[in-house]
Image: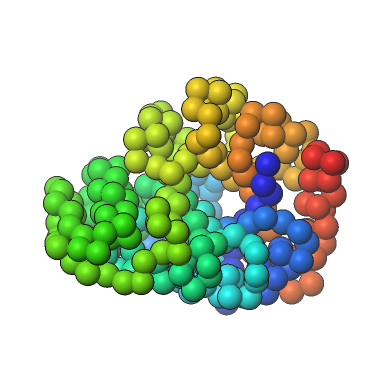
Length: 272
């Protein structure tokens, strides 16, 4: 099982390239960065844990952060966790992802979410009630752009083509688009149009992962938000998760090293 670390890079924390170098030097497999294009002032009430964390309002542009991390490392895989596809133009996003993947030699992965901040989604001109269909079409359209010299897509929410768009990703199959979600039906959607399934750790999640991996061998499952405890890491390894991500958070200079050491100790105990 691969071990990843989730960080939140802002103008007040370690830079994304600094975070990534520390994570790679500590021997981990992957680094993840999240995305909010903005935070509407009145959206605290939507955050499930109370007041919106300060760092959510200050994150770097996702592709700038991921590219910075990839260029500062040599083997680390860098992923979004998550990318807000409902808020993004699919043609531009396909171009950005292909460019970053090409320049990094195929080390980019995108974990795709549907979005929980409904006001943020509305500000991008998308009806939140339609976001599942919007995300599905944009994912499918991006793959068409990556895999075809003259790409086209004709759907309800995305309509274009034929178009040319280069560079193509480093991998012929394109950048992996792993579909995220803990809600009912997430497994079905991941199998239908995802390159795997990602979800957030919580009660009952390990059992869902075990059931899914048993029924769908070879389909990758990523679990984020795993506790820095050997027992939690062991549980997901037994369940068949391909990768777990533990939290570095919005670490400042001088804080990250101790957090990574704690994660390293827990992983070594859990996995030997």
